[in-house]
Amino acid sequence: MFGRKKEKKEIYSFEDLTRFPMVFYKTIGEDLYSERDKNLVRRYLLRFYLVLGFLNFNAYVVGEIAYFIVHISSTTTLLEATAVAPCIGFSFMSDFKQFGLTVNRKILVKLLDDLSEIFPLTKQQQEAYNVAYYDKHMNRVMWLFTILCMTYTSSFSFYPAIKSTIKYYFMGSEIFERNYGFHILFPYDAETDITIYWISYWGLAHCAYVAGVSYVCVDLLLITTITQLTMHFNYMADTLLAYNGDDHTDEENLKFAQNLVVYHSRALDLSEEVNNIFSFTILWNFIAASLVICFAGFQITASNVEDIVLYFIFFSASLVQVFVVCYYGDEMISSSSRIGHSAFNHNWLSCDSKYKQIMRYIIMRSQKPASIRPPTFPPISFNTFMKVISMSYQFFALLRTTYYG
Image 1 (tube, rainbow, N blue to C red):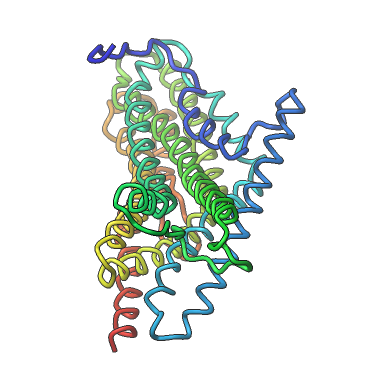
Image 2 (cartoon, helix red, strand yellow):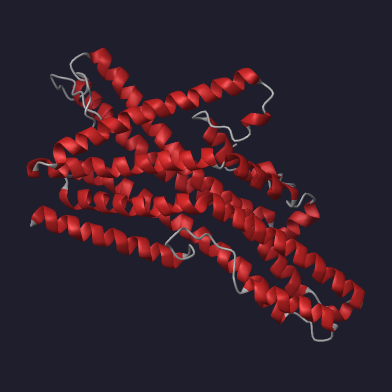
């Protein structure tokens, strides 16, 4: 019923925190756990659907590149050529992310299995880990990010058809305008015959959906893994800060410290796995995002009102995507650094020398916090976001100077 307050979930499973990207990915045929699916028919049908979708997607990308090459040499159509540039950049990012996922599939599945092993299972443990908060916060970010990115692909895909339908059926236009949402150089006449037009149009719409999902879901998997690692780091920091050595024997203190070191070491190892899987993908993502933001911004400043609205959505989606990645990178750094602060600030004065030596080791190790480190970039944080924005503005200024002389 409307207005009825949603009941709070009692116990969360590991699958609850990973379901969003997993289910969304399956809509284009990608299943990370396909090797474990005993239903071979479903397994191979999904794989066939995925391959077919990407073949269709890349066929249209070739058409976009051809359109860009043909028009970029003419100064009279430079604006049209640069209009397709953000779409090409977005397509390359989607392709590269999917390629990176395919290459690192086994490592990623193992990472998820390892995170599942240390996931708190009982209600009492989940309250201590604050699982409900992380699940709620993560899902809000993922929904916002996904809706914004899919709004971009949907608006570009369906706006021309909706506009033509309204003008033809409701405003008395004599012809049904057969336009496409993206600039494509087709190897055939894609507008004269209505059947060919609609087949090409829906093929392009599915291409945009595949690009959007593959673009979004890799980032959603990054958000999922970092959220859980952040949860573990913060739990360690909170537990350590609340620990009072005076309330326990030397043996209990030593056991607590040793268990903490093992737990901390495992979480750091998992964070390195996250870095190994996603760092190179994020590097390309940031470089391409800089160009996409630049070209989208250029279209906003030089286009008509209709295009401004469409490209503003594109511009916003690209900004949010970079910000979300940098936000979670910053969260990983902050949460892992907290452990060293907690080790120093908790009550350790009365503990024996072995316990103090272990705390010293933990503090030293925390001086190098867990992070995502793309090649040539500093560890991902809010500073990285400012660097990407700066790169985008430099490209934008160069393009404006070239266009306006």
